[in-house]
Amino acid sequence: MRAWCIEDQQLQLDTLPDLQPGPEEICVQVKAIGVNRADLLQVLGRYPAPPGTDSRIPGLEYAGVVSAVGARVQQRKVGDAVMGLVPGCAYAEQVVTHEREALTVPDGMDFARAVTLPEAFLTAYRALFLEGGLQPGQWCLIRPATAGVGLAATQLAATLGARSIGSSRDLSKLDTATDMGLAAQVCEDDTLKAQLDALTEGQGVAVILDMVGPDWNALLGGLRAEGTLVNIGVLGGLSTELNLGALLMKRQTLKSMTMRSQPLENRIRMAQLFNDRLAPLFASGRLLPLPLETFPFTDAKAAHEHMAGNDFSGKRVIVVGD
Image 1 (cartoon, rainbow, N blue to C red):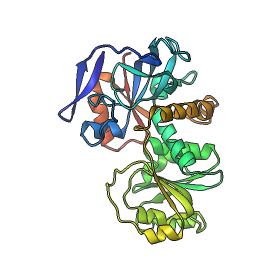
Image 2: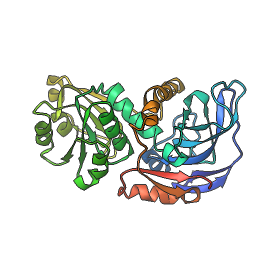
Image 3: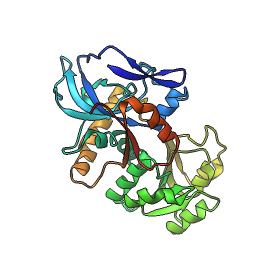
Image 4: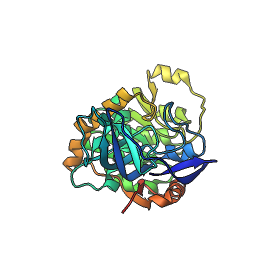
């Protein structure tokens, strides 16, 4: 099989031996690969793969067709259309994963669109509703609402009865999120708290989904008493100073999470959650795939350059084969 490997902080297309599934695993002939910010960071040596994962090959998200199954596999068969998340090694023509981690591609959805679902929607659902405890009718702040997870969070909030506020330094970048159900927009400037107070009648938002860091004091000012900030990214920096007194007086909660480094049993639980709660929403059309820009498998470097430009609200997808 061909795979994109990391050599001296660059992607290089190599030929590697074909994969064989373990007893409870499936081998997938990959048709589409989702490009995520973590992939760019791994290539640059800033986001190591979890222990036990081949660090040479980046990639967390795949969609394709089951090509082989292990001896004890019961839930999947050769020919099944599947998608999902893996701890790494998705930038290849084949991936191997536990059968219970794989998600079923929704009927009528092509692989390029299917691969926009797993990372964005599972991350957003876990952050807003499982970690953040967001309830129908409550306000949440999505920071920013311009990338894949932000767009998925916008759809989920609207579909499940909550109200979302999207933030950006450039409000024109929130047009796509607004089309997907964003209830309000705020500009990230010195008036952020005042903007949030005006929208929430002075109460503050119940949940903040933050992908940027590190300026949390301004965010916590717009978070209501007993609200929760869930951080899933540190694109703005790795360290911050925090007013613990304000946090204490409002009894607020700070949480952080990542999907990638979870143990296998947790990843299986998240796959089951997708199949039980989110798959029916895609089947009914209440949730939609993300806007996407596609790149051929041989041009993965261009996909990374496109993502680094930060000028597209949606998902970059690498298409494998025809």
